Length: 312
Image (cartoon, rainbow, N blue to C red; front, side, top):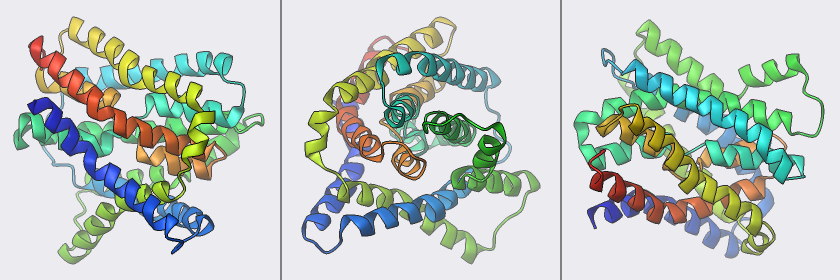
């Protein structure tokens, strides 16, 4: 039962943020047009601060297993390439294709990585999660820009694609954080505290806007795509990735990082990015909501199973 409570405690705040947004919208205090503008603001103003702070606060001097980093990044690239080849054969609409690919490969690692690691292993392993997050999340964002641009419905222009990558707000935030980290630049305490508070606001605001624009009637129409995508994302993909990782020797906290990277629910940022880059924003939001609910069960299943096999 401990594994179940770990999963539930990690997911419940997200569900409450979504429910609050859904409830407020139905009181007519805000309308959907306002929430869509708020979503744009969160994407362009708050997510860059979150990305900056996640990289900036990484502890110096921590040695991360290069084998783990290589496996995480190489497996991510292979998964994305396979999805780009397979998904268009199953899904006909371009805006849906990009969203499905993003939903399957992109997990909420930035928010679940450290939290779940502390719940299972304690504070001692938090740095392992934090540093891997600072490497994987920028890769998620670069890939997301490429994928969403590919399926906008027009022939990708290499120059425009490069411009969109380097001007993406999330990538700019991460690069700025990396520059501060590598140069050893430290913000004044008052400014660092303010940046941390803005960073903490990002997820609640993003999920609040998601809840406010959620239409359950649309889920029935997207049921087939949602079911296939989420089974792949929460069950099939983690099974393959973790099976290979265990076979080549990953154990304990390192294997657990791969579990969270591939088994956590769909990233909150995927909704904001799809909404602002020509993807099917409603479908992206549905992936976030349903995967968050379902992950209470699937995260429990993975932790319980891997513990019984003495792998984590």
